[in-house]
Image (cartoon, rainbow, N blue to C red; front, side, top):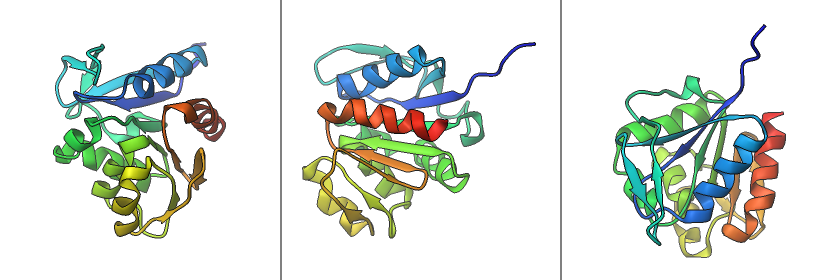
Length: 171
């Protein structure tokens, strides 16, 4: 009998923060999860420092029901991601379905664009704190915050706690 693995989506766009894509990608694969890198197109995306990552699939080929969790890394990529209604809808649909939605650093921009922050407690990189507050969130300065199915973290140094919280939420 074949055992079905849980699938996790990691969203990508150009100018992503290296550790915030690669640390969860490798950590979740190590934990036995199926990790799918999702981008606007099926192509290579480049980090802020020039490191490539290949999107396994496109935003039009997936839906929230395909995943147990959707991970949004930071860097400047989230500002580019939120320009695509399909990616924003993927985040919104995952949240509405009670799936794990996790954002680190500037990933909170996608949460704001998805309209899922009203009355939620979150953290983020300090530079976008006001954006999340204006979107209705309660901001706290902690390494990781879990509010029901929403998990947020501030910066790369928080990745161990961020990934641990996601894995705990996935069971």
